[in-house]
Image (cartoon, rainbow, N blue to C red):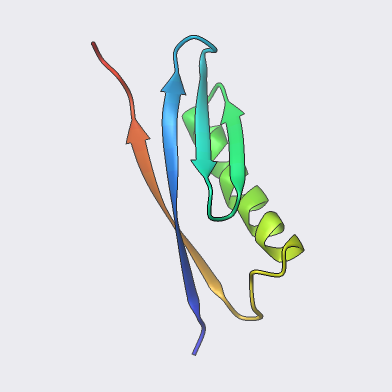
Length: 74
């Protein structure tokens, strides 16, 4: 059976910089992008690479990401 590895990634809009920021201390991961969709695609690639480099991922493991989309409206 494949081990499921789940990580929670916080995604927030930085109004001052005009970018979306994705942060996860457990991976560790910190990325930004002007596009929300582009950021999520980068997270999928980079998170796996970081975990692999840090030897935190085992063969056959499945990665699951839970994103929290936070945007201040007022």
